[in-house]
Image 1 (tube, rainbow, N blue to C red):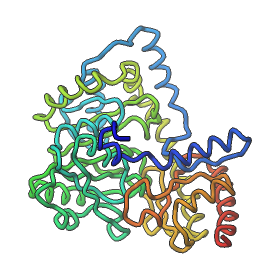
Image 2 (image 1 turned 45 degrees about the horizontal axis):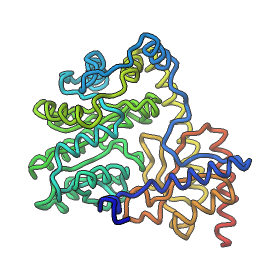
Image 3 (image 1 turned 45 degrees about the vertical axis):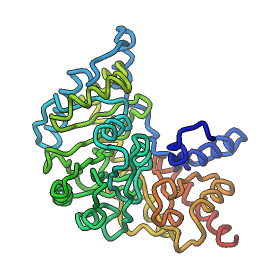
Length: 390
């Protein structure tokens, strides 16, 4: 409508939310829907985290904290980098945020002037480009393919860099493809971006959820990169809204100023719970869940390939499979609608993740148990038979 800001026409809703809304309506009518659309683990938050949050509430720890986060939590996150990556990150460089989304909002507001852009892969997580539009910048979407594991390369960045570019954003593991950037690939990307005069931003939100080898952090090879992470995925804390950002030291005072104005602080009780998330007892629980996700991937991936979905690159992390429907025909939105209506299996159409061949891809989230995944494969088999007859 004419009274809304012009940016609202460019900020799209999650198409997956329409799928979820339809799934909920079907469930309300008695249908048994298998959810493979939402990127939310089906595991409840680990008990030690919940207990710590409850104690925080009981002890009255419900007030504001410093905008950059509780000092103890910033120190604990720094210790996580020491344990995982052998890095000595000064806790003063760590900004605790209300989820990884707030970290991206801070970075966007800090770096981007009106009209400037950030290069990123297509496909990619949709909020990345929408936050940029919010600050009057925009995303420079670079079509990627299986040849680069759907990741940016130095060659792609150089080919698309122009005078409006301010930064490059990558994700490892990636949503929606689950692919990783190796330590060497991160170094090359960081070196290239630096030579072009830009900033490198890396989404490491799915760190911890890898299935062959641990993911490298860009901070191992580029101390000047911006890194965003979250307690949502590996730690199972989606609703707690807790994340963090690692920034170059010179950026922290400006980020603090933004945090004070945009949201004051991350939820205090969630920060206390976050301390429990980083304890040995909780990490052991998270590792058991990581192993369960790997078993799910190893069940679902060959099953989808047998059904005719094309997955040319095996996902190495996260809990997604991004699959081409070229051999099946039609477009992804129509297929998703067909499958939810006829088989009560909910998937995400590729349109959520960009423009490049989006209508030829769907995303599966293996965030439900193996028994349900087996049921989903059988339902998909039935649904594809009727799809081919449409």
